[in-house]
Image (cartoon, rainbow, N blue to C red; front, side, top):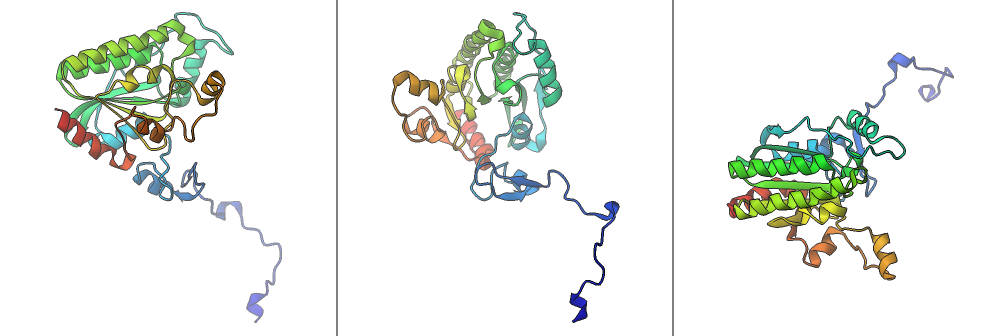
Length: 280
């Protein structure tokens, strides 16, 4: 059985002949830690094939999932923040904006667009958490307001997908005013009897929750999303009591009447089409 015996020792394979796994070929679930093929994960609407964990995604992925053939027209694509307060923390605000734009290839924390969803024309606003925590500044408020104007002018439904840490502290009062502006625009949408659905994803907190995120004709959420105004630690310290199990999860919020239903991302496009058709 000499063929079991290695005759030569210290065999080295030349670098050019070594086989390496390409980057991005596999995806590891953030929840159950199991591994799946990236292509399989994407085909499953960026949810885990093992535990159904909904991976956090942004506007690129949501637009691809919702718009037919990923065909849409973006609104106000080049709008970018100024620095009305000349704000400086660890770096000047404008420097932070420029660095984040370069890193994310986004102009700000929200993108708005219109296009067909199962043949039904709708306007979609989607927040990107990677852009300064999805924080709501003047550009976010203005882009959402203009998206609502487009829905009003064309009498088509509006969908807002929120994923945010709340108001943008670098813009202080300018940021907080976006709560009033977007809420007033949504009131016009309601008066015109044009449907508005708000989709809350993980996380949706702060001033966004206190304004447009909770003003939908239907407020819906993805499974397991964190939804609230202040964080659990702040609330615990304020009331001096332990909080209920799964406090501020989408399931907890639904149970207490602040959501209409929870939708699996794989069914999102179909459920939204049915909902908007019913509301027309």
